Image 1: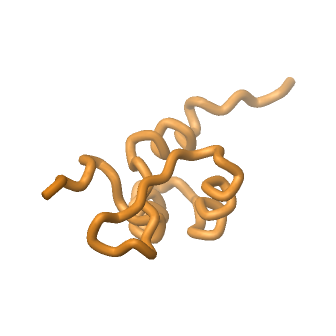
Image 2 (image 1 turned 180 degrees about the vertical axis):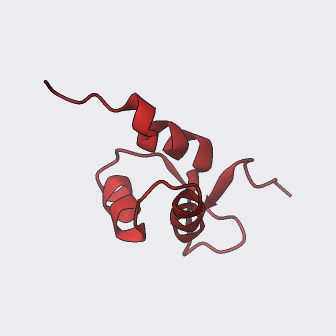
Image 3 (image 1 turned 90 degrees about the vertical axis):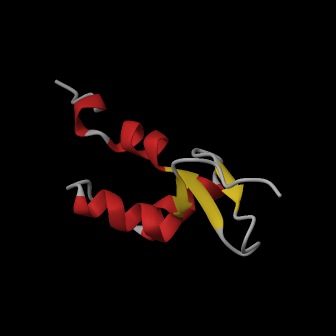
Length: 71
């Protein structure tokens, strides 16, 4: 049996974890990004209805330090 990838969680778990870390992102935002192919997703091996996202990737994307503020 294959193992679930490390640091991959459901989109709802990711939204919750990021909010607890002070990063404001909603489940609907993650769903839109996934639908547009902007973030990588994987199918949950235990529940085929659930899409997983890489939490480390999301932390990099939504890290305020990575944002460029125009002049």
